[in-house]
Image (cartoon, rainbow, N blue to C red; front, top):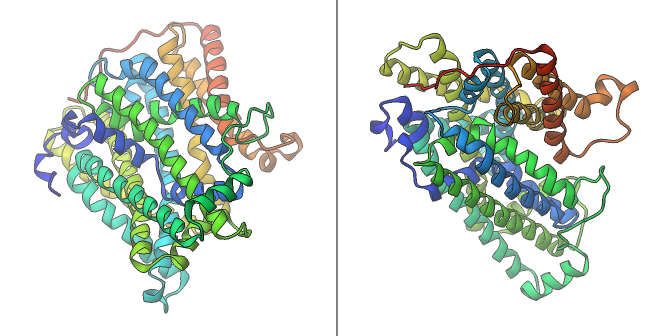
Length: 479
């Protein structure tokens, strides 16, 4: 709420007046891409297998370098508020509407599930106080707590409040995990020496897998290549992250923030995986029905109350930072890419009022989606996967815009649709057309790479066949 008085224009509300230092932006990027699912699921991966998941983080670094070279210079030409304004400058307004609309739908679906996921943890934490309530009432209360707390500061302070609370929340969930790390060392007889020896003997610290098996989820090739495509899409074309990059004081600061966040994510994943390997030693490798329940179970049943409280706060912090980023990016896209194009002569006071109303509206949408997510697995799977399914097509679209001159709006729209549909088929082909389904499930790190390739190839070919080179629009500004 400290930032409310300084929120007078859209530049203040959605870009924090481009006054945030690069190191704070870097921590905010890390917080925005770290959900509760990351915090509780990554330790489970090491518990169940080893450290090969870390290969993705190396791909994340490669992807960030690509963004710094190819996409960021384009974003800092002119004065942009959203990623999709770049699409209009290159192709035209219709494709901008298409890409912005796709972002709104897929991001909302993913975030609704993430809110429900943290509500489960909060519901467990409040179990004794909610003992007489039904499961639905517990979920409703927990989801309300998460949404209302996050909505207050996102509504009041805009992106500035989101970024600075992200910084604090990053320290909370990393600090909480480190406390958990040392707590496990204290609980295992023999301490770190015994943990390391046992885990190493079981191959838990194995990082690299150089096998050429395409169907294997975590290999060096799927990690570096697939991870690079995944990050180039999520951090270079998704408003959730691009908005932070546009809030930097300069192109140089934006690059520093993005690259530093990649190193931080690598270290963060290493910490989470290490906790998982340590838990494997603590539980003597006992099998759990679901590996993502291992860390929460340990928190609730084994840790002292003060420490478990800190870790539950850490889980809440990760959820709130992710949700606040989604609220602000969904609202900025709605206002800049849709409403402002219909009413370009509106006053700044009106724009600010609608931005705050939009924040509340998206908060209600995500609240409802979180409630719907509790109905079953298929809804949850849809929410978690659909964003990555769409990001491949989005990346292919942006690459057509910045790497080619002959791609046009209609051809690119055809490519975007084709890339999106191909990824839908890869993901759900068995359910949609069982007679033509793939023999095995394609690992998720390849989704974005495949979608990008299909979009680029078909979009460029369609543009050549349809003809008519596009003349770029004039520079775009929300001012």
